Amino acid sequence: MNVVLIGYRATGKSTVGRILSAKLKIAFWDTDAMVEKSMAMPIKEIVALHGWDFFRAKERETIKYLTQKEDGVIATGGGVVLFRENVNLLKQKVDLLKQAGVIIWLNAPLQDIIDRLKKDARNGATRPQFTSGNIIQETIDIMRQRFPLYESAADHTVDTVGKSAAQVAEEIYQYLRKSGNLDKIKESKN
Image (cartoon, rainbow, N blue to C red):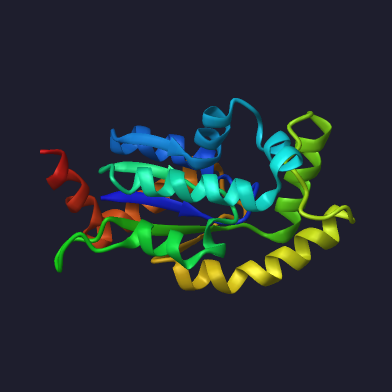
């Protein structure tokens, strides 16, 4: 079983995913990093050269590839929920008793997201904006659109406010244990 992390950009999916995969002793995959590697360029350049639709198609290819894998933590891009096909692939039932993945939504406060995006921009790790407008208004508008998509896709939600990445990973671990999903991961590892 895969543990899939969803949420808006800058919510800590990659950082939490690495910590969680180490704790679970399973593989870690970052869909954005995989797309960047396959294209040999950062997402910002992919989007500038080919557009968001092209990037989203590459993201879907990556999701399809990863759903063939078992027992990993998958950190997805913030827009993965824009296509129901992605969510269905990440959750798909292998058979009546086994689900391929459990989806965890990392829900961060708007101000935390904006602060992280601004910090990224100052450090040169700029994520491509969706519009040419103000990053704050853009984030508010996109979050308003995506919030119900994250909510409907998630099997479990972790509110990250005031928590370190290690605390978020531990909360996910405890959810997996209490929900019986940790046993499903251990079973398939044996």
